[in-house]
Image (cartoon, rainbow, N blue to C red; front, side, top):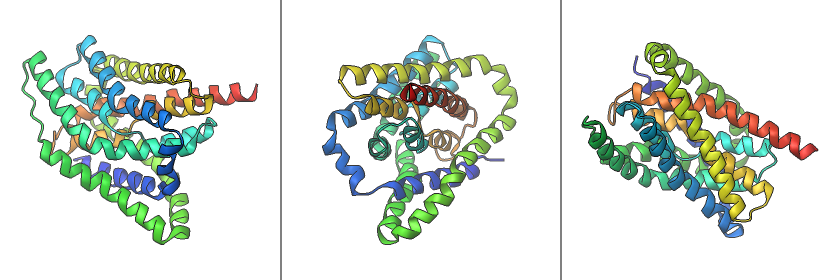
Length: 286
C-alpha cells in the first residue's frame, strides 16, 4: 500500500484548516510585534534545519534517516501549534501568523535547503541522493499553498460556513495524523524496531533542542512570557504530515523509510509539548 494516498488528504485538510484561520488580523500581527515574528520565523527556517543537520551528523544516522530528520525540520509549523498555544495561554494570533508565514516561506526554502543537504549527505555517506527540486516545488504548491488559499477564500466569502467547517474538521485533524502514524508503524515495524533507539533519540533531541534554543532566543529578545511560550511551541511543532508526503511521494523521494523520522517526531512532538503545556498551565495558576 502506498501511504501517499493517506497522507495527501490529511495534509490537504490541515492546510485548508489553516487557510480558514487566516484573516487580515493574522498578517497585521507582523506589524504589531515584528521582533517576535522575526525570531519565530528565524527559529523555524534557520535554527531547526541547522539543529537537525548537526544531530544527524553527530549520531551518524544512515543517509535515509539523515535526510528524513532534516526534512521534517525544514517543514513549516504544524497547525496544532495554534491549539497548543491557546492551551498554554500564549499569543494565539502570533501563532497563526507564524504558522501561515512559515507555510508560505518554506514552499521555497525547503527545496533548496534539501538540495544542499542531499549533496552533503551524498558526500558524507558516498550514497548518491538526487532531489527533483522542480517537482518538489510543484507538489508543495499543489498540496500546501492551494488548499490554504482555498481555505482563506472560503472564510472570506462564507464566514459562518467556514466556522462550522472549522469546528467539525478541527476535531478530526489530530486523530487523522495519529492514524497515519499507526499505519506507518505497522507497515515499517521491522525497520522501526531495528532503529528505534536512534530514531527516537534523534527526534527527541531535535524537539528538545529546538524548544531550549527558541526559549533562549526569546529571552535574549526580551519578549514577554506569553510570546515566549508561543515561539517555543511554534518552533517545536512541525508539519510532520508534509514531511511524510514529500518523503513518500512517488514524484520526489518515494521512500517510506525516509518518512520514519517524521513519524517518530510527530509522536514525540505531541507528547513532549503536552508536558510543556501542562507545565505552563501549572505555572500560570501558581
